[in-house]
Image: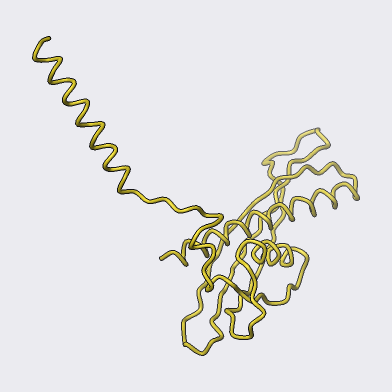
Length: 168
């Protein structure tokens, strides 16, 4: 066996060993369960929803982060802004029009235990596409369905932001 082959095998073995050591130093934690998701600080109390979309966001957050009946639990309040618009830049003869609904949500978590902890605020945006075809009932139904999809997406994004903040 030549010296080059021996050197190549040693270099490859060293690279593999260093890779395993580097990966062994990494730590991964699950987003959907585990110590971060089960913290007591994530048991929130939620404000009353003002619209159907806010209700969807609150329900998704309560399902994933948990709720607390305590009067000293942190209060989570969501403010939503919805914009629906045409995606096409020019007119076509096609009666079906591509549309987009965008929801911007700001979640503010305020401590109510008297500790003086500053409020934490998270803002996220989600969009959903739908098609309009100039039939009033179908257009309205498509807009509502797309808005609900965007609300669920923004709720998931807010949940991940809260979990990331809690893990710090």
